[in-house]
Image: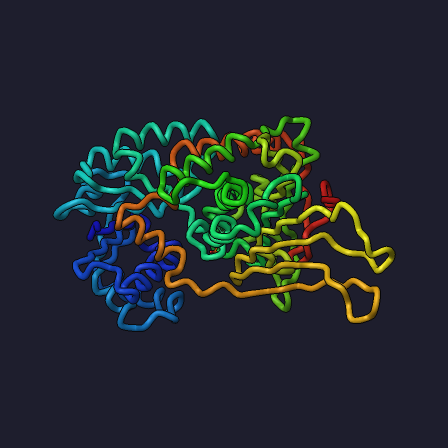
Amino acid sequence: MIQRLVIFGGTGDLTGRYLLPGLAALHESGRLDPSFRLVCADLKDWDDEQFRAWADAQLDQHASNTPADSRRAITAAARYRRADIQNPLEVAEAIAGDGPVAVYLALAPALFPAAIQTLHSAHLPEGSRLVLEKPFGEDLTSAETLNHLLADLVPEQAVFRVDHFLAMTTVQNLLGSRLANRVLESLWNSAHIAKVEIIWDETLTVEDRAGYYDNVGALEDMVQNHLLQLLCLVAMEPPITLSERDLRDRKVDVLRSIRTLTDDDIPRRTRRARYSAGAIGDRQVPSYADERGVDPQRRTETFAEIELALDNWRWSGTAFVLRTGKALGADRKEVAIHFRPVPHMPFGDAGSTSPNVLRFTLDPEGLTLALTVVGSTVGTLVPLTMTAPIHPPELPAYGRLLLDVLTGNPALSIRGDEAEQAWRVVTPIISAWSRDLVPLDHYPAGSLVPSGVGNSR
Ligand code: BG6
């Protein structure tokens, strides 16, 4: 287990909201080595005490469920270093120490190429690992370039392109439900499943993340990574084991089977929109264009929906709809498996029935199955919905990911060829949208899913 973690971007939102809480949860679970040391590096002229005061406040806010002694243990293990990721001397000082180190780039993706080059000249100790946040690149070409740069720095096994969705319990349970039971897998194909919806609708707005979000938008922030990863887990062939090679080979197969959307398909199979002023509950929300840090000329979308087809034996004929939006009227975060109607209904006019739907709800984490059953009145059919919560996880998603980084298990991180395949799917859409082949619709904040192109899906 690696005992040193250095986070560049160590005073940023990601560190405060996810990484420090993840480490505190690891400490509480007893899985953190007692000699674990943390260095947070950033551009602020802080000393250790100023950093620790900030970190304590972040932990109090974002990890209030973790006992105080674990929160304090993390801040006590932390040091602060002022370092510019583009300055090899400062970076070398930040990573200096005995033995290998895990370096976490919690930075704007635009800084990745420079960061990798600086780390090269700063000489990472043998056996070190590198962690990169998404999005990995901004299109297929830039992802390929990043992969080449990384290959010169550390072996692929030591690169962790993280996607925290893969560490969520329900997401893990996509695999558990499919592969540890007989009951689902025999139905898991296009003969029985008409449509798979992978939905991440948020009431959350852009908040104070415009500096990042305005450069990426919904398609690159969520679809290129998180939602395509969920699609992989739903659609992949059963792997031999859950080791990194088997799991990632099978995910790459899925990505490779996704049919490339052409300029003719894109207006019919994708839509984009962004929120205008509105109210979410009793909260007034300004229009996205007026949010602090947003450049309205960029025409960044806050809602994206795409429909994909998979060209393989199992899934030919099933529609995969991926959708995400911010500032919507209700949270809906789930993978919904829509089964086909029964081939013959022997109940006469007992009532209309809805096809079965199996939902993996992602937040809160749970499972729901909609069945049609015989009603209490003779000759009627009624819907029955069975819902079960999923056991709360021992570790939050980032705790699990950090554990994998420190112990050197890359199974839940994205391999280089996987990232490139995901960009192969999304790059034609980015290109078509930038040429305005699809209009940028608007929806008032707080509305339900915006109507418009493709809403009949
Ligand atoms: C992040 C996206 O990766 O995932 C955010 O950048 C999104 O825009 C978030 O809100 C959703 O995940 P979580 O775990 O924060 O609910």
